[in-house]
Image 1: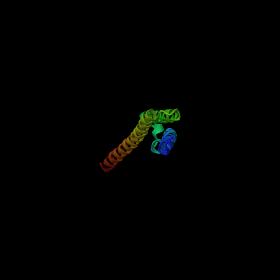
Image 2 (image 1 turned 135 degrees about the vertical axis):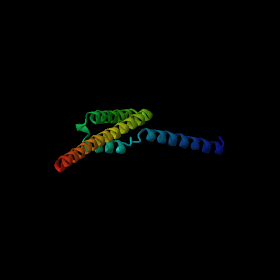
Image 3 (image 1 turned 30 degrees about the vertical axis):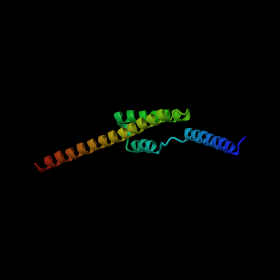
Image 4 (image 1 turned 135 degrees about the horizontal axis):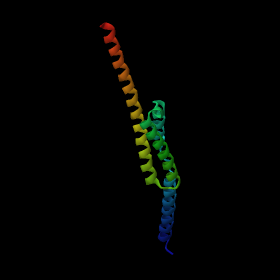
Length: 122
């Protein structure tokens, strides 16, 4: 055998091992759930559980997050990423709906104060 051929085979083997190792590691990249979990937590803190529509989307976000984790554990990265985006969107919607409900209640209270002030001044 020629010496150059041995080096070529060795380089090929190293490249193959490196590629196998890298692809194996890529499957084990953890799903980045921080934004989703913080969105869910923010919606809970904003009172989403007390607003029917917000509560529904909050529950969906939690379920979708768990599905995303399950898909990631099975190595289905694309599906997990897609489900994670859905969970994040539902969490954000739950937060927005709970803020809307709070703002409506505050606006209603302000209108009531104005009515009361008008009655007091007459």
